[in-house]
Amino acid sequence: MENLSEAQFAYLLLTPAFLLLGVIAFWPLLSTIQMSLFADNLGAARIGDFVGIENYVALFTGEKDALMPSPFLPESLSTSELFGSALTVTLIFTIVSVTFETIIGFGQALVLDKEFPGRRWVRVAIIIPWAVPIVVQGMIFYLLFNPNIGLVVGTQQNPTFLQEIGVFSLTPLASSVDATMIVIVADIWKTSAFMALLILAGLQSIDRNLYDVARVSGASPWQRFRYITLPLIMPTVLIAMLFRTIQSMRVFGVIESTIGSSGCTTVPSLSCLVVTTFNNNLLGTSAAVAVVTAGIIALGVSVYIVGYARSEMV
Image (cartoon, rainbow, N blue to C red):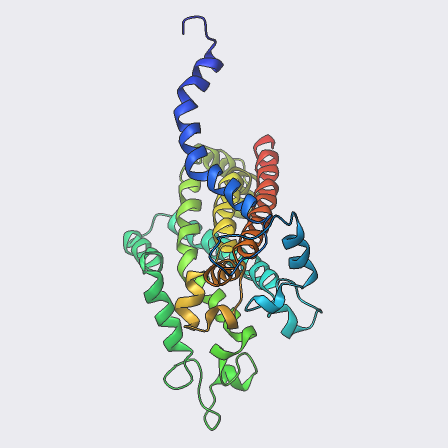
């Protein structure tokens, strides 16, 4: 070991971690990729004959739609088709939820970064939604939007204001568009606190002397935010968005807990397709959907990594 360089010695120390990561992460991924190259077999065997990329071709051409609870791709750009496709629903959920969670979490973090009486209690109030179990979260929003007992929706004879202006239908939990929006709102309500905590940690790591110097130099509050806070906090924001994007692309539990047993039918997602096709012994199809989902996540991660590298160079 005395002849090893510092880099070689570091890699030697990291070797056990790499091996463990390979066992618990890369080996299942490789097994899933291998399974996706075989045909579905509903018999005693786990998988059928080797078919190469036929599962992927059938997935993107719509040949697998008859075997799945929802199509993978939309047939047109109509609202019903877009909100009936697992891929578009997952992308809509991810883009809308992550965007609003970042904006709301950023605002909460800016407030919590200030010194004011009762700040500790405000922090507790913001964290409470994040601490609520996902089942309880789903039940809260299920009861709010249940046509029989919900406070947000009413009946045909006595509709609420939101229904009168066309925001929700009379049965929002049975409508793909309304149910998707409800799941997005539920996710934003719960996860904005997570974004706020991560961004707050980044804000409190900024040297306060920078603000004092800017204040003495006559910089306005907007200029201090624009030229000090925003550039220094951007790497933290990108990391927080990366975490939430990965989680949102795998959305499943909040759908089932909020919409109920018909959740994956009303609000289809990629994870819903993986679970339902796997439970129906369509292992090749399930593995293909899982691999495509992993590929989309990897593409999103690479975008964030590029953005993070650029923010670090500023």
